[in-house]
Length: 306
Ligand code: NAD
Image 1 (cartoon, helix red, strand yellow):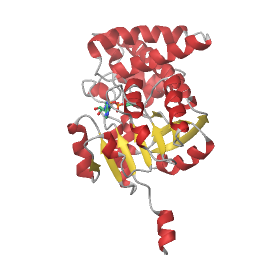
Image 2 (cartoon, rainbow, N blue to C red):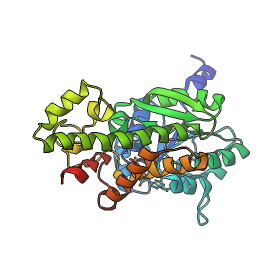
Image 3 (cartoon, protein in one colour):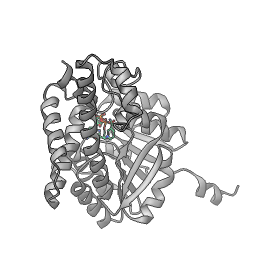
C-alpha cells in the first residue's frame, strides 16, 4: 500500500471528553476499533480505566484536542457542554482552538437550543458540529449497540457515521442542528412515563399477592409489553443483571431522567404542545430525585413499594 493510500485509510485522532457511566465504555469501543484516542475528564478516577485500555490521558481539554481531527463529548448537561466548548468566563472554550475542518460530535443529552448555540459558534469558525445523543443505556454503551440520534448537515453526518458505528448499532440522521436532541427528549419523555407506569403496575400486582416475576412475564407477552419489561425491570431480582437487582446502583441516574423530563417540558412549552403524562412523570421524578439523585431511574419503583 502506498503512503498516500495508507494516509487515506489511517484512522483520525479522536479526543474524548467526559468518561462517566456512558463515556468510558464508548471511548473503550473506539480504542477497540483502532482509533488513536486522547481523553480528558475532571475526575482522575474516571480516566484511570481508559489509561489501562491504551488511551493517552490529557491533563486539560486543551491538551486532549491538541492533535485531534475529531472531538467527542459525553457530559452530564448543557452547562458542562457550553463550558467545555464555549468557555465559562474564566476559561476559554476548546472550540476557539480547533482547526478549520475539525468535527465535533456531542453525545450528551442537552436542550436543542443549547446544541444549536454551539453549532452556530462552530460553523462560524469552519468546524462541523453534530448533536448526537444516544439511547440504549450503559449496557448498550458497553456492548457497542447504542442508538445514535444525530442532528447536523448531511456531510458531517457522513463523516461521523463510521466513528459512531464503532459504538452503536443504529445511527439515525434526525435532521438539522438540534434535531437529534428533540428526537432524544421525545424518546426519554416516553421512557420516563413507561418506567413509572411499569413500576406502578407491578406494585399493584404485588400488593394483590402476585409474584413480580410471574406478573412481569405475563405483561411481557401481553399488551403492556414495553422496553422496561424487556430489558430493565424496575422490581429487584426479576432480572439479575439490571440496576434494580444491584440496589439501583449504576445505570441512568434519576437526576439525569429528571433533567431530560425538564428539557422535554421546556421544549413542549416553546411550541405549545400538550404533555399531561410528561408533566406527571416530571413531577414524580422531581420529587423522587431529591433523595435518590444518583440512583438508577428504575428506583422510581421505591415510591410505590417502600
Ligand atoms: P456521568 O455523570 O456518569 O458522567 C459524566 C462525566 O463527565 C463524569 O465522569 C464527569 O466527571 C465528567 N465531566 C463533568 N464536567 C466535565 C468537564 N467540564 N470536563 C470534563 N469532564 C467533565 O453521566 P452519564 O451517565 O455518562 O451521562 C452522560 C450523558 O449521557 C448525559 O447527558 C445523560 O443524560 C446521557 N445519557 C445517559 C445514559 C445512561 O444510561 N447513563 C443513557 C443515555 C444518555
